[in-house]
Image 1 (cartoon, rainbow over the protein chains, first blue to last red):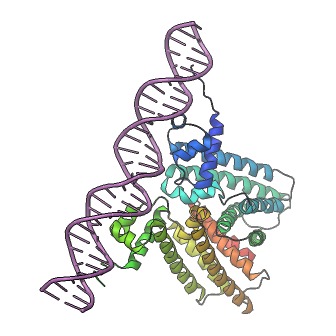
Image 2: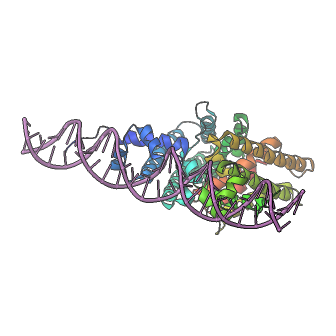
Image 3: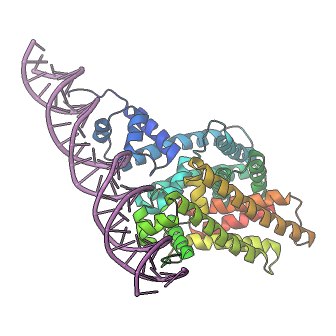
Length: 193
Length: 193
DNA sequence: CACCTTTTGGATCGCTCGATCCAATACTCG
DNA sequence: CGAGTATTGGATCGAGCGATCCAAAAGGTG
């Protein structure tokens, strides 16, 4: 082995993730990626196959992080219904945060901007959707068994509904809807439970 | 007055709309716009200030068309609840259509891809959101007065919910969710009414 | 300490981007 | 019918794109 790397690959992926998150896939140039990671072109192309490859790694990293946060929330002590409400509230807080210059959620952004024209990314997004769906379904079903949730709607459908509501809140936030309205929507969406 | 135009400006905007709709703003090149409209660069730049200007016209045209369709549906004879369900069904049909190569809805796409980095487009999207919100609110309120709808949730909030649900269905569809699941989500979302 | 492999910075590749310019064209109007 | 003007096609602009290449640098290994 010869000259070792001067940088941490995971840190580079994280930095790239921030760049793609802030501007989207198309609008992020390789120069932007150099600036964000602090690396030269050579290091990037020596480590990753292409901009596209780096994007897939960055997206995977984002999913990993977000799914970790989701799992942590769902494993908490709250009653099931309040777990769901807290999840929606977290989304609203993210979207309405003053310092979040409207970058939203990389997964949602990628579903809309990238998925249709990129089968590989689409497959990755579909897999990730499945993970979130199963996590939510399990929590809803266990809440129901515990008598925590009384409705009789299919747990899987409710899990789909939660994910769709999150997507809807994020799109609405981008359209300029204010926090109070988003919170009212979140409350109303819980009527299905 | 001299040499007259050989093309119809509105048709050109329509063609550009299709192009932006299919590929997104960033990924649509001026060459794509020439191909889609059948015009030369000169004609495009002579008629529209820039790619951005043409995009705003195309987006406005899309909103006009879609809001027309919405108004037609809402003015129909169906009971209010079924109007809403039909609206959601239409969205699902659009997203799941075999020939719709995943282009989705230009408004949703633009909210996610463009709004954050383009104040002018953001303002346009916000205005359009207001139009849709008001149309839905009015229908819900009139349905309630007619005894068509029995819940007591704020009509404006329900209108927000309908729009958010549409956005959520569209994002979910892009993530690969199948038609049956989307329809179940649409039904569940109606629980708030 | 010198060799050898890998990384690094930076020049450069061919291409396409959005936009502009100009000469040729074609139509209206006096 | 000729003068004048707006439109048109196409060449062209400088800039930036994603990607590649190469020589210089650096540190582990004998």
